Length: 356
Image (cartoon, rainbow, N blue to C red; front, side):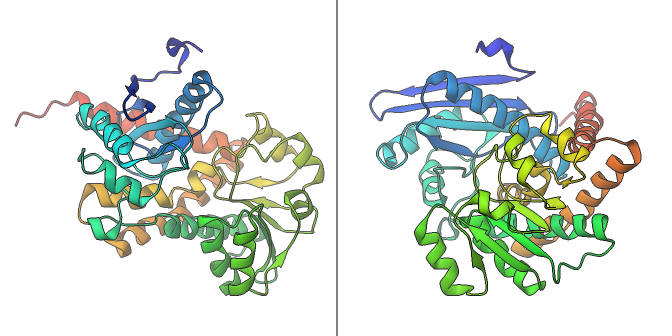
């Protein structure tokens, strides 16, 4: 793919430091609302082309996520091409931090797949433009707690839209993925009176769940999960899980989960709508994490303040679902329209020059 085929990206930067083995790409999709904010993914891509395709797609998605979350941040993302277990080092992360710093604040990084708060602590030794650091380093720490809280708020809003009440008591929720977000979502669901069915490919994650939440029913895999009579399907692991095969087996009335890029193809949104399945756009549902890292970056982190903003995902989801119903379109189309409207309306203010 040619960089010039990217859909409106402002800047794409290739970063290479042979001594540390760093190979990274930073993509800034938009700074219309402010500095581009998005995490750094450390992943063993099969090729440079695959890494480039991923970072272009992810950075565009962050622009929409940040806009719909009401943040004064544009969209950006970075990928480090390599095995995070074998290739990650302090020197590599600090070299990467210097490339982030070289952008002068146009891009603010944070954690993503393959990177953790301790990694951001290393990056922060070379750049001011980083969030998601550990509490010991003055950061907010793990953002998955608020991500899960936001998923729960979106799920309550979807329940109100579909069943006329936010109450999840007596409903069965299928949680696919018991990682950082899935495991924090479960106690919210249990406290709300929902029955929980779950699966994960990691035996340790399953044991952790069984020890703490014995009432959760564990099934073998996602295929068994979606066929187990659930009311709500919550994908909280891999993307691309909503495809033609899933649609044939899925009898849930709501899909609302934390996984990124859940739709295997854009047209799946229309097929979900035709099947009568209420789909909550993933970038709306999982925005609690970016709300947290934005709060950390924009000032002294306050968990309660970030939690209050994350609770607003309930109203945002409701507004999107109401608009989709009123306009006869899909929730994805309605969410995209709202995000684009905010980027255009607030972004135009940059034309009003401030003299300082």
